[in-house]
Image: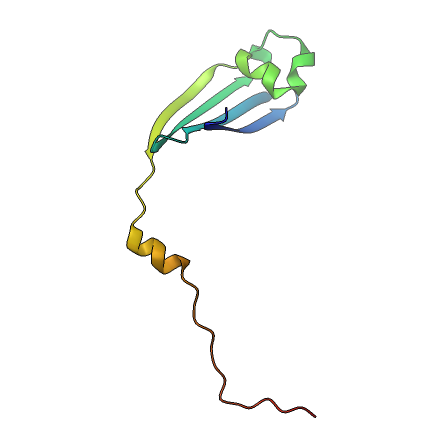
Length: 106
């Protein structure tokens, strides 16, 4: 993906013998486009509802497809155009302060 960016943020919660939860936020951006795509999903289930081997319970990537989808949100986030006047102001360095006191060596 030399011309794009993909980020996966994952929150995994496992309470032994009680419940499991996986929240994912995925962000995708193609550098030549002026927007990002953000997807948020939340999956959750009680352990007694799951019919998968316990060996899958320790790996979020393995268990996530087996959890029912509770929330799914999709957003197109537009990147605002930079104002050229604000760029020139922020890139300029402040002028150094001058001291009226003379340096004395002892």
